[in-house]
Image 1 (cartoon, rainbow, N blue to C red):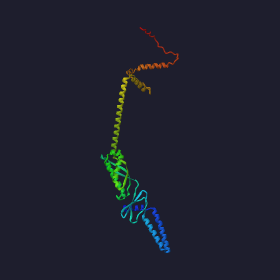
Image 2 (cartoon, rainbow, N blue to C red):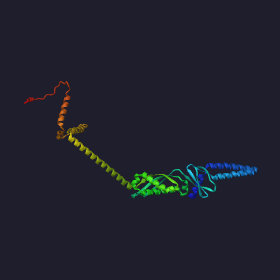
Image 3 (cartoon, helix red, strand yellow):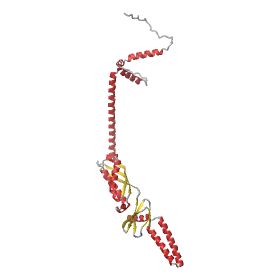
Image 4 (cartoon, one colour):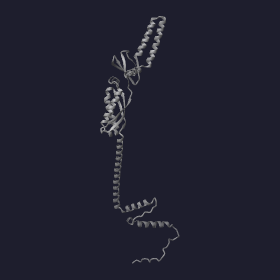
Length: 326
């Protein structure tokens, strides 16, 4: 059995409906009863009525059709297009009319692949995309193309190859929204003559060779290292500028320099209590000798509580005579 004949049979079966079968069964029952009653009573009128009812059942069976809410039936009369019927119940003229196709008007999704397609910069890639489309004009979809489903799939695949060849790999990887829009426009330009509307196209995956993946990974790592060095160099330059500014401030204010030196010494020994060896020149420059003496004298005075009878130890040996003024 060929595909065309199988499709025609499926269309005929889908065109039937339980309402028509119910009406046919009721009419056949009535006609059968009328014929039995007429044959029993030899009533020709009753026999004619029964035959008429059975003929009506046959006509209803052949004429009454039904399609679903999302379907449209293409009716040909004497081989020429007559009308688009549906949804719901409709009638055709038996023998004269024929249902050529039943078109599904719901949104459909079709996956298509472009394998080993060269980009503009001659990189072979495999691209997987999904197409969302619907039939907007059932008449043109049934009359202008033999199999609109296959036609849409082939048009989408060829358009995907064209778009890949017109763009570089970087654009394909980084700007997928623009690629989706360009691909939709290319497919729509080919399918609009068939009554097909392309809702959207989404590139799902882009596969590149493994060797190229390794090269791109090394390139990205090198780029990150370069950026890190640039940032480090900028930070060093900023720190150097701050040091130069601080040096100019300390040059005009020796007291601030001394305070900074003392703070550095304090910060270095406050946590571990370690001993720091400082050159004598640094102590002289910051006048730490005088400050240390003043600090020791203040600690000694604070150690002697008020009202303490104990006198400080006296120094042994002869005292020096007082200096007389000249």
